[in-house]
Length: 246
Ligand code: OAD
Ligand code: ZN
Image 1 (cartoon, rainbow, N blue to C red):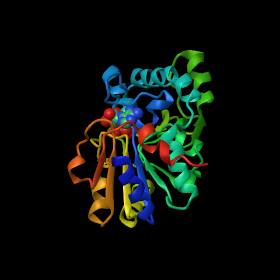
Image 2 (cartoon, rainbow, N blue to C red; image 1 turned 90 degrees about the vertical axis):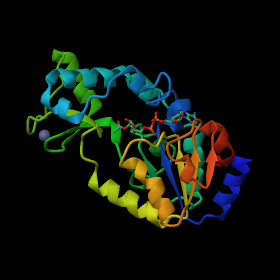
Image 3 (cartoon, rainbow, N blue to C red; image 1 turned 180 degrees about the vertical axis):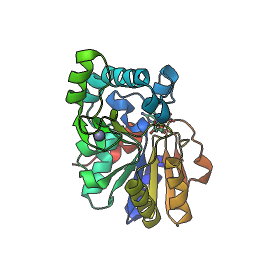
């Protein structure tokens, strides 16, 4: 079966780089973006330039974030996260590339410097002007006080979750590290992503072009199934469950 074949490929690989999307966290209660019921089936994305230009867009953005707070706060790593953490502890996975913002790879045991967050992190906030970090509690107190998304106390620019919105610059350092890792692995495993959002969706192909084997695990077909060496159309928890060690 596909899962047995994956086991062989994992056993044969020396350097494995996992690349994750929202599908790895759905079993943790966090909705993905494009499945039925997904975030973008319920809400239109707020592009970065709109966030910058409009107080009401910023207010709406923070309303959405706080509406999700219980879900993020309660989420624990799932079987997929735990399987990848086992391979990391075994020395097979040097670091992980993720589009996710939920902090669950860190919670599963990856050191922070080994989680390359292409789209940032939603568990804290940052000023979009000077980069000053703020805890979400600080934003919540201000927002609850006057109903307005707050600005930075240092420079006056808007404070935003430390995530990347559409139209916002990708983080340089993360892009460079993800590029180097993709080109240095011999097995690249794309997990739970529709592989439609660029430039993130370019890493599987980059790994493949540099000589790695490419595995895609996703319950639905993805945009890039045709370039993969192995495609597993299966539930991630089921597919990776056998690799959860201790
Ligand atoms: P998507 O919602 O586009 O894709 C998630 C994929 O995971 C879907 O194809 C689902 O079928 C699959 N899936 C969900 N649960 C699964 C499960 N338990 N087992 C197997 N497959 C499952 O999410 P991403 O590809 O992560 O970026 O989205 C990419 C980017 O688009 C996000 O990082 C975010 C979003 O807009 C920004 O906002 C910049
Ligand atoms: Zn600032």
